[in-house]
Structures are given as structure tokens and as C-alpha cells.
Amino acid sequence: MNDQDYTNSYYTASINQSHDRPEITGEHSCDVCVIGGGMTGTSAALHLAERGYKVILLEASKISWGASGRSGGQMIIGYNQSYQDIKKMVGKDDASKLWKMGEEAMSLAKSQIKKHAIDCDLASGHYHVSTKQRHVGELEEYLEDLESAGYTDCKLLDKSEIRQKIDSDKYLSGMYDPNGGHLHPLNYTLGLADAAEKSGATLYEHSRVINIEHGKAPRVYTDKGVVNCKHVALCTNAYLDGLDKKLDNKIMPVGTYILATEPLSKEEAAKLIPDNAAVADILFVLNYYRLSGDRRMLFGGEVNYSGKDPSDIGKIMQKTMLEYFPQLASKKIDYAWGGNVAITVNRLPHFGKLAESTYFAHGFSGHGVVLTGLAGKLIAEAIAGSEERFDVFSRIPHQSFPGGRLLRTPALVLAMAYYRLRDLL
Image 1 (cartoon, rainbow, N blue to C red):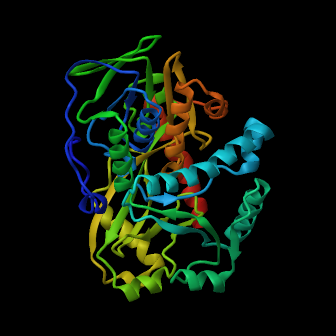
Image 2 (cartoon, rainbow, N blue to C red):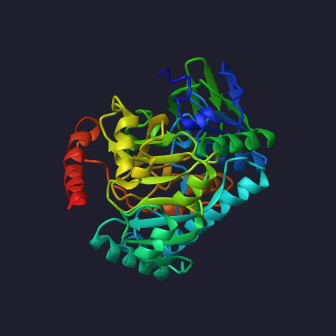
């Protein structure tokens, strides 16, 4: 695939609009240079432009080319860690602040969609489901953990109740969050980009950053352009691609995959997931799915650390989907694609400063649809002089993946083999 083009997916086939933005050439000056045109970068550009900053955003390919335009689109509350474990890492006070900001992130995403009239198939409701007996207890513990954080909107469903919500015999119980949901991630990100431009930001595509000179007056270089600025916001997530070696060791790009069936009839869709919520199981290598705006089943899962996609993504994902929904055996697979998410060792987002004027936020570990919008907002706050909330995230302790770029992948593959085996037991 040419990195100048979007990957062939259901999302690109149903894109709202795809106008080309120019490549940056020559020398430019601005207040803030944002690197990366995904959800984090476009959110940062929007919030900064709304504050009156002159913003230039540089995207290596197309706006939302990476995970932001390929993800499962699931809006999940909180983080990929329990509230109690977060308290052990950062203390009660910061844990409470992190949780409240996690709730704010959900509200922010929805309010931005409404404020900027972003057409992205926003739908409400999210289920976590159990497939094994031990998962039933784990879901109960999950609910207790959420309630200990003050989040009391979720409810448990037994086997008969979850069977009425999802047309599969595989589930033993479920937990429903009415505040969760799902959306079309590519159209959502493009909507943020349009809003940023309307607020005064300048966005460039096909403008891969090759070097950053940090300091009080940073300079950002592409092959054909230079941006002189006062601040830099590094928002590349899984596609950092060695731009900063220190940061590179804190995240691991992980491939995950999705298929899209042909459209279902209204009756089929209403029977499959009657309330049109998003669903994710609680296996370590989880499966996640939802219905698209035109009633396709979008079924995702699998993980890959090699950097190379499987030869037949559709066949692999269809096999898994049919284990849960054999009634979809006759449905044609119209699209199948993959993309990288960025995980951290502790599965919590990694925010911080590389230098006096360079901020970064990445490593959302599967919760990026919601948390990225908040990350952009917090970067804007910090650049405007209010770093308190950004600093709560920056105090989360993060380790490097052992082995560096060469050895971290085989080490993680060995660890994941254990968890895959555990999922089967």
C-alpha cells in the first residue's frame, strides 16, 4: 500500500469528503506546530486555534490515515487499567483526577460532534461480555471497580438478559454502559480537522517530519519545508516511526484487524444487536464489534506484532466472527483491513514533555477513540500556561519495553503466547 493513500476499508468507502490538502514547502512560522493528523493532533489543532494560536499541522500521509481512521470506533469509558490499580500507581488524589478526566473525555467527544455538526454515525451504548465462567466474576469485579471510582451508571446482565441484547449463544453475562457508544472514526477525525481549519489552523498532508530541533524556538523539518514555532505538539501515536528514540521505547505498535460484511437487512440488524450498541469481550486478546451506519457487521480482533499484516485478513476474522454469529455465514465480506494501535507497558496513556516547548501524548492502549480528544485539549491548556491537568497524566510512571526496537517484539510475542493460551482455558 502506498502510504500516501488511505487503506482500503469500509471507512474510506463511506468517507464524507476527502479533499486534498497541500504538502508544505519552504519556510513558515507559527505559534504551535502539531505533528500528526489523527484524533489527538486534530483535536490539539482545534483547541489551540480556538484559543487564538497560529497553528500549523503536519501529517505524513492523509488526515486520519493511521489508527484514527481504521479503528473499531468503540467509545469506552476510562482506561485499560482498573481504577484500583491506577491508585496504586499514582495515589488516590491523581487517580481520582484521572478518572474524572476520563469521564470528561467521553462528554467532550460527544459535545464536539454536536458543536461542529460532525456526521460520524454516533450511536449510544456499550457492552462488555463474558465468554467463560471465570469472566462472570471478573465482570462483577469490573463493575465494583467502576463504582469505587464513583461511576455508577453501569449494570450487570445475566445470561438470559445478555442473550436478549446480543443474538449469540456464547455469552454468560454482560455489563452495560449507557454512556459508551461507537462512531465512524475516520469521519469523526475529518470533522475535527475541518473544524480546526475553520478556526484558523493550517493543515498540510504528505508532509512527513524528519527532524525536530527542540528548545525555546523549535524548528520542525520535512523534506521540503521548515516550520519555526514556539511550541511543538507531537501526536503521532503508533506511527512515531523513530522520530524520537526515547519515546519509541515507551510504546509498542500492535496490529489489529477488522472486517465489514455486506449490509444486513433492518430485520437482521435489529435481531443481531437490538439497541445498536458496541460490544467487546474481556478476553486478553479481545474481540470487538458493532453495526455500521448502513447496518454492516464490523467485527474486529486479533493482534500482530510483526509489522506485517496477515495475507487474508478477511478469512481470519470471518472464522472468528462465525464462532459467535454462525447466522452470518452467508454474508459476503466486503472489506477487511488492519492498523496499528500503540500500547504502553502499563496500558495507560503516556503524556509528557520532550523539551521545554515540546509536548507529546500517545500510548492510549485501545481507548484512543475517547481519550485522544481530551489529550488534544490538555496539550492546548498546557501550551496556554495551565499545565496542571496535563501534568496529572505526565506523572503516571512509564517503563520502556525491554529489548529496545529489535528485541521488544519477540519478547512480547512470548508473553502474548501465554495470554492466548489462557484465553483458551
